[in-house]
Image (cartoon, rainbow, N blue to C red):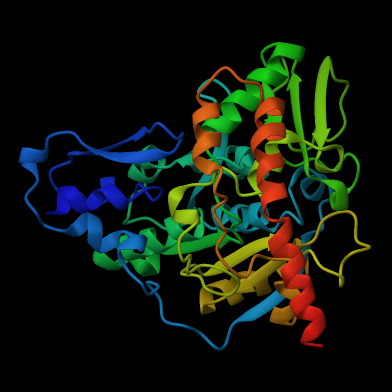
Amino acid sequence: STSRGLGDVYKRQVCISVCPVKIISFEENDNGFFAPKIKEPDMCIECGLCLKICSFAHTDLSTTSRTDLKAYAAYSNDDNIRLRCSSGGIGYEIGKRLLESGYKACGVRYSINKRRAEHFIASTPEEFQPSVGSKYIPSFSSEGLSLINRKEKNFVTGTPCQIDSFRRLIQHYKVEENFVLMDFFCHGVPSLLLWDKYLSEVESKIGDATFVSWRNKTTGWQDSWAICADIMPEDIDWHNSYNLSVKEKKHFYQSRMSEGDLFFKFFLGNYCLNKCCYKDCKYKMLNSAADIRIGDLWGKTYANENKGTSSVIAFTSKGKELTSLLAKSSCTCEEITTETATEGQMKHSAIRPWVTNFIFKDLRSDRMLSVIAKEWCGIYQLSIIPKRVLNKILRIINR
């Protein structure tokens, strides 16, 4: 039945919008991910709409493959925007441009009170400012997506699987022409259990944080894998002041990847990602259902650039038109090859470490992250040494 099949739907949350009897809700499960719950199973009318729009109920994308895509290296000409954003600020610039043209924008912000990322609706560029910066945790999207008026012009951002599901939704309602969709190069989504434990340990040092950021360029873009937490004065609203790029900090906490940051150790090591992130993900590299895909322009080509440059892939005529408009006004856009645009991006789904279940169990316990990392991450790295040695020998033989 449909209510049973929904058990494999983990991240999209778009199914809430299409359910005609409104019996689907999303709650955080034991592993720290938002999972569907059928509130009244007996009311399910077996229409199948929730599975029709679920991206992981299909092997193909909601859009056909394209051969006329364009790739760009791009960044905002406003240094304040570029500094505040994770790479070149193009995501915010696209939203700003569309908002000024009469669109509504559905982006993702971090809620300090709820300690989670969440989709929200903005009507002005000022309201859209909380979307600036990467949020490397699951986004609670159902409330924000439910506020979208399908009869209006809308700009919607999200993970590739969220956007694929959302395109299926607007295809179902035959309103695709009202939407511009944007996703990003996605590594995967880590558990909220990881974030809760990490933030609690940080706050034990500085007090209750009123601002957090997953990426920070105070040491430059190439070393921007830094998490910052701060206690802000009550009269300053950080999120609504992107021009506030330099300020005196009352309290400050920063940990960089180069210094062994534990959050990024677990995240980039794939130790506690969502179940669907370990499957055969069909959204890597140039596979997308969006009009535009953005990300960091890593790789050798831009290795010496330290302010942040975005990789931009325009898949549709909407995407190309938007990029052209930005290039003529607020941004610098240089056409590049798709090979350059995808340098440093994940080519395949994340491999699930065999210690993952043990890590999830410990994330639910009172054990410190440093202890969990030393035990399970250390054991895992030791266990794969023979495989690495074998692969190296095979590469030498095959030369």
